[in-house]
Length: 546
Image 1 (cartoon, one colour):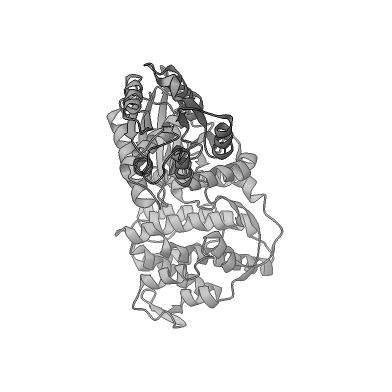
Image 2 (cartoon, rainbow, N blue to C red):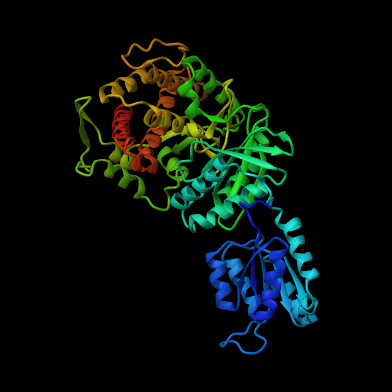
């Protein structure tokens, strides 16, 4: 067992002699037992510490519960309430196990967790072989955590930093120390066959998830690296379901994601490990890194390859029908329960502006433009649109790349049916507002005009704007996205073309306004000015829609 990862057991026993006997036997067998002498102490430890297994005396001395109180069984209510069911097995101790008590235990406990009843008479002579036998069986056959993984010092530091990030950014999380334990458990479950694991931090998810590259050693043989995502337990459960329903049947080719290991769960966390058939020994890089290090042509080619990968999803589109695009995106962005979230975020970008005015002054471009908030709330958002399976959060950190420009996806938490263009407009806003280097507002206005002026049929258009090579690279990637949009919804008939432009404009408007409520823009001083970029771009879009 690694000196970095111990097998922790909660021992609940009110008789001091029995308790010490059990603690000594477990410690000598290589476990880390922590004692609780009564019901209240056991409850406190369950809620404040991390354990893998429990040993519970059924009847506990308690001044408020005299006689045969069976308080040890009552602790199962805490196990269920704390979301430990199914991951925290229990050995129950009793002086005398009757058929009636066993029936009650079977009826009440089977739905919560794995358990084993043991009579105290089997513990009277040291060592207690039956107890150690059942404890070992639970660890080997039920928990299936690899406690012997070797980690180098930097990988240990990665685990500590990752636990701190999860504690800070995910909702309803315990202390960093407890999350370190749980993160080690997740890795031990995902890599049950590994002798050594080298971890490297990738760009982190914007929703608080931890994303790591993991390189396992299987004995003396190195295995190909995987991308491990660790997040809140319920989020990983949703992601695993979405993978089985929408990814595995449609995108399971050598150029897309394979759920290689997992899902695996702890009390608060879930973990999942992805790889791709073509990854071989290449280091995992996301598109956020890739575009900065490769040429314009390589980046555009990578996007085109990504769109081919998404082809099976695009092909699930349904028949076009009239829809309210605003309502589609309110549902897609999870805003139904609180209609004020997006308007409040828009107002917060400029608290001193008159957001009830029909038009607002923007300088540049030095003229009045439609109020994008009023347009969002009251504008005509009807269009004839299709829905299909979408990734749901297709920003550049969820697109993994190898050095040859081949793309595959991670993070399917929001995957499911939605507006056909949803992924494309999200990717555009991520490139335009987060990835773009600092540029002037004048140049931003010129880029917005350029994107609409260039024909989508031009594969290599002349840009003709004064900008840096990195900014031009982003613009060429945005034009590649626009070409894909028109491949999906374009038409040569004038009326249909006008309707397609309206559909795209409305979709892009919703994604652009949504930037104002994204935490990574509001919390990062370097990105905070980009919130005005989004408001300006939204106002220019509204002008076109008018």
